[in-house]
Length: 247
Image 1: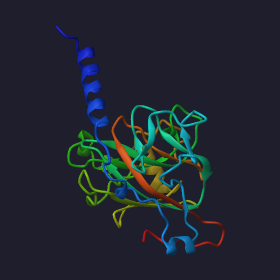
Image 2: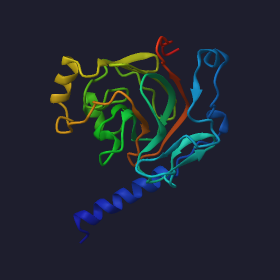
Image 3: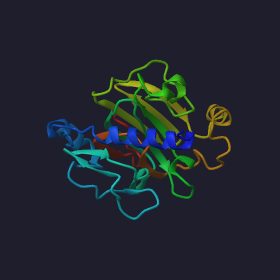
């Protein structure tokens, strides 16, 4: 008789193997370019489709085999841990697009560091999820676009598996906004009374440094599932520079 532990291991192995078979077939899907308007506004690419020189794995000096480039997309290829930027960012606008695998889960982190066991010890997370099939969809604060475990989107603006989702994140001093496919899904002021109330009632309440940083790393979560990212762009909000918004 197979033990419960062995059954779980076999299930996870099969699940990982199934996810690894999903690929992006056409490089035409993975465009990583700035428009002329974005260039004039000061946007910069964090991923150009050919190099991962601006990224490394959490707690490592380089990128391991868990992340790589697939047909021009940044992809989670196997277990490798979270992917983080080499540089830290404080005030910025971030645009990117993601595509999740069937029943998949990932996340986008901002303002994190490496002093804990994972970037989630300090970073704010925008959830990436297959809202139709992943078991975590049952918690509204864990659905795609959510400020993970803190703020639930008031509507589901995610697109189905196989389609690309567009993200805009604003981090400007204490103010942070999450947008998914042109709709705002979360807005808060870091350290405010409202934020502190959310924090005290979240899973992060026993993480004393959670959400305390005003500058930090940007990260992409390895949650065991296949996920693709493309068109990752950042615009630094130096003093006096105003946000241009999601479009």
